[in-house]
Image 1: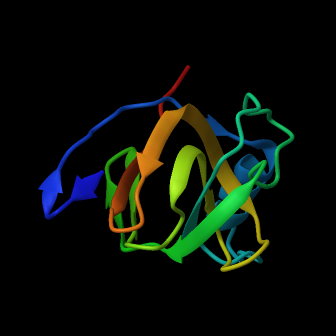
Image 2: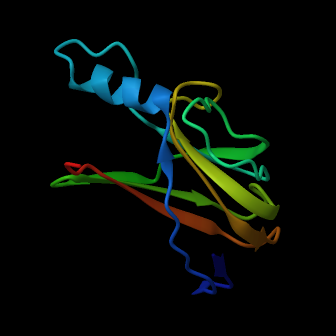
Length: 133
């Protein structure tokens, strides 16, 4: 979280790549992908434990375009910034999507509340790591 141009909070959480996200990954690996690539991140106030069958956030409050996407070896890092006025309140969940509304969800995470004030910027750097079991 950024307040008055200073980082005031930094956290790390584990996420769940949901079933629709797994299908999306398979689609993107095909010779003729049918789905748009991941392009947006959303935040919300839901607290339900992520489930493989999730297709949306429990209670979405804001969605923004990704600021960047970086591929590095077996990692893909998505970055989004929710600026002042975007998604204020006790934020407890986030997800990655391939559309500005609706769309396919890649992954979802639930975390303890981040209290985002109306003048705060919430920056999320989300890394998906592919590794053999």
